Figure 1 (spheres, rainbow, N blue to C red):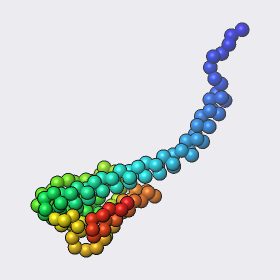
Figure 2: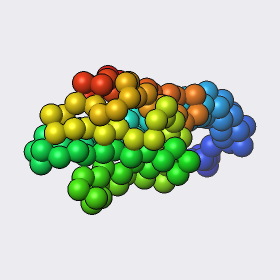
Figure 3: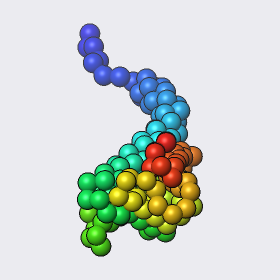
Figure 4: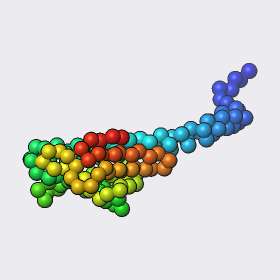
Length: 141
């Protein structure tokens, strides 16, 4: 008597059907996880740029600025008319950047120069993160 070592078409169909059902549950969660990861990474880059601008102002005893372009989705750190750092958040992470001001300038003491608080929002899909910078230069996210 010959023994078959394979699977029947019915068994393969059942297994593939179960895998399809499991994948339909996992796909939306994967998309949300990917969006949240991109927002967290973009927020970390944005905070890094703000910290660099403040530390540069303190180290050089001159004004330093973090300039935001919400349309292009990038941030540039400038001091003494030179660009020190540029992060293109939209190209790197696919996020949208929102801001209530176009820049944050730190004076030689590391304090925010000019208007009061600055709020930045980073968004991708349903995932949103907010960074708030006080006039004293403190970051909260």
